[in-house]
Length: 251
Image 1 (spheres, rainbow, N blue to C red):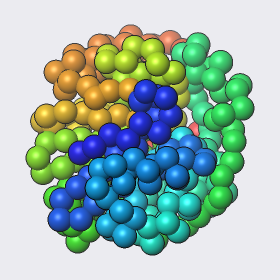
Image 2 (spheres, helix red, strand yellow; image 1 turned 180 degrees about the vertical axis):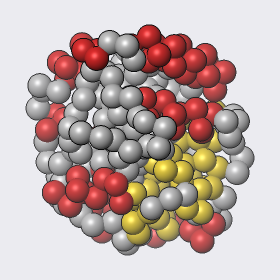
Image 3 (cartoon, one colour; image 1 turned 180 degrees about the horizontal axis):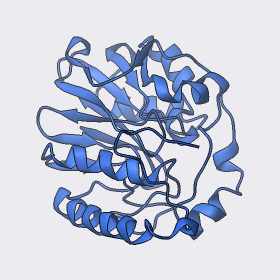
């Protein structure tokens, strides 16, 4: 697993999985294609070596250069069907539900609302998905909550790319500590997804912003987040959407 810092010192990350072949996870912001290709070249990977491009979810800082990189590598894009609406219009999935004051501030700024070239993924994923046919010993996991179509990737060797299930930094802050991302579509469902991947005992957790993170620290953070959600569940004005046991959201 190789982190490719797309923006700043890990403020936005893409990742390169290497096995018999190479798979790219996430594509950064719009216009990041040349930088990602350059970093891949420094790792000894040329565009023709890439067998797949995985987009973890429908926010512009993760799929911004997907169409460009598909042209450059001729590799298929794999993404979950739940975020197809964002990909097909080239804009971040909505609604953007802030997790705190920073999210409310960031939601009003231009970067999250920029657009990029729309695309339709070549493989629309509905559930967990093996990457063996693409030359890497890993699988995609459906981990909804941050967005409906959020996914993570876990390798057989124990590396986990968690997308925005949890943050390790944003704009350079709290770089090596678990933290809430600025937004979650459904914070409670996101935590359930995080607990699911933690149960797989990853050795290291790579995230879209900052990191990598120690799974022990992430488990402690997730336990605090579970207590916080329980505390807030009796406060309707707190803005936390609890997911019913059957996973169905009601209006």
